[in-house]
Length: 194
Image (cartoon, rainbow, N blue to C red):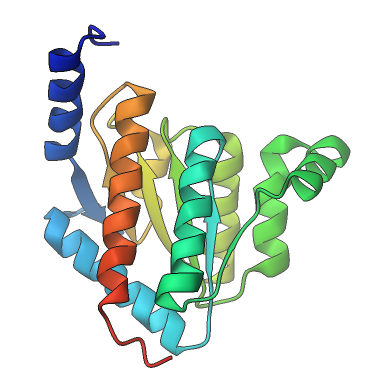
């Protein structure tokens, strides 16, 4: 954790933003601009086919996907669903396990051609990784956001993978939040034919 004073905190946050790396599904690094453009192409394809976006994350990242779901539905006009409703999530966690809760939801709701946004600061959350595997098995498009270690297992599992090179939760989450806002803000300017 960097020193918690204003100048160093925001310098490290700036470094995290400027260090974002994006890779496609075969691990080829692409620019951030190209990654955003490709993400929006996937989202447009999903929307025009009448498919939906599913979003999964834990903790602070769950707040990011809830906000993103709101923006996708209300501002962009894309069907989107999150699986962090407390009664369902606690029932699945209690009766099965927390590690399988999102996997179960993706298997229940996911369809070929849907899009899964999977966000994990560490890229190591078992429930997120399992949901990605379930989405892959269904033939879904997958976009991942991760951080911390560059070799985290989530980083290479998507059609597009956004990685933030920081080990500080706040920096990773703020950067993921800004990325999601930028994507939905850009999507609002597009004609999805809805």
